[in-house]
Image (cartoon, rainbow, N blue to C red; front, side, top):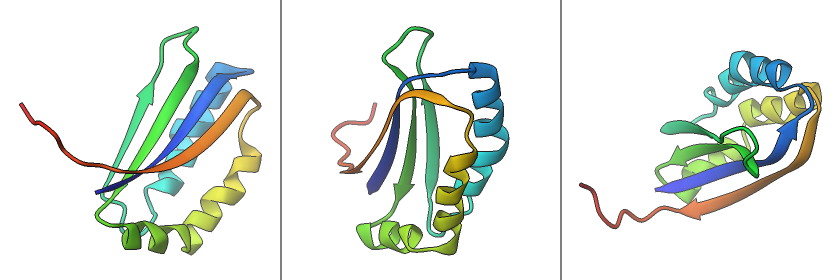
Length: 103
């Protein structure tokens, strides 16, 4: 399993406006990416270093590359300019997920 993560370090200038746009518009664009198998959002607590983490799961690196080169991903990228102002840094990283233990 391959996981593409987006880390939001910092905080929005206006958390209510940011969350409203992110949850009602932006996430619906991401869910249209081809071959996306799972999508998880983890939201930090007020004052935490990381505001939220978006995790997108794919069966293989090939599936991730197909999503990255899709028109749906391009549309999502263009949407970033519409975000309410975010004070901080947004970082992206891909991980290979290996299940170690499942209780």
